[in-house]
Amino acid sequence: MRLLRNLSRRKLRTGLTIAGITIGIWALVVFSAMANKIDTLVSGGARYYADKVLVSDGTVSKFGLPMPLAAGDQIAALDGADVVVPSVTLLADTIQSGVSMGGSTQILGSPAGADQGREQFRIALTSGRDLTTADEGTDVAVIGSDVARQRGLSAGDTIELRGRPFMVVGVREPTLTAPDTTISVPFSTAQQLLHDDLPPIVRGQVEAADLVSQFIVYPAPGADVEALAREIETTVDHAKAMTGAEYDQTVGSSLAMFNAVVVGIGLISLVVGGLSIVNTMAMAVAERTREIGIRRAIGARRLRIVREIVTEAGLIGLVGGLFGLALGTVVVTLVNEAGRASGTILFELTPGTSAFAVGFATVLGMAAGLVPAWTAARLDPVEALRHE
Image (tube, rainbow, N blue to C red; front, side):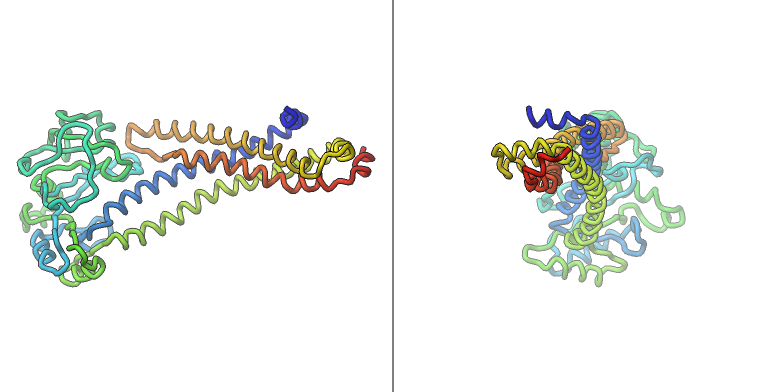
């Protein structure tokens, strides 16, 4: 009760200090939640790339050109290549609308079971079934959770892709990664969609059955993955091979920089709040100099004075941290709910982030109160009693 009474002596000053901490924690919570979301997406990509080599056309920088299916035979003949799976990817719509942290909605087609059990990145279904070899040549699809939510679809419904109706036979469970915005169709169907997407002058020179977007290569046990990737690029014309290590190096460094920037913004706000705590507690000590002198004169130890001042400062940090967490949670929830219908989930607030934010605010408050507390403890009782 004494702590609360001491803090309530200057309600406006204490309130403004708590407001400063609240704003800092709010910024930290919001930016950390955004960093968590991006980290989840990147982690999903890292798990996907971990045990394979992805081979695509390297003549252009963004999506790449289609590759001939026969290139898969060249790759399969190399030492160290165990299983080679052809794959077709293309945008679900020619014009994408909105912004999604999970990426644009894509169509994916691969022969069912072609990985021979090597794929470890498996996703369960919330309803329906997965694609089988019997689906080849038919217009059926398995959709990601974001696609199902955006379009209000479930197993048995119909989805239109590039002007063609597809029956939804399965819906994947949420993963918070790229599969949530992916629509899987039979391999031959995806090849036909890719063929139809080519310029007319090119379309007339190739058959749909000869086209793929990329190859997923599973190395043989014990094979040197990096050496296999380099050999693929040497052997196959215009091929670009990416391994898990290259993915981590390319994307991981960018993620680390982004995390440092967004968290740094929040920390700067907190430092400003910490300085306001120092100011508040220093003024409180100055105003209570005579009181502190009386307590020292009747036997109060320096440690007790320090403990009381530091506890008051920590309480300011705790209250500001709780208010900041509450405000950040409201903002994160409202923005996510507003974008959920379009699949734009920008934030992921975890218990760890919440606990860190409140704990950091409390520790910051206590640390900021150390200097005023030490000043109070060193007051000479006689001089303090003379203070007006």
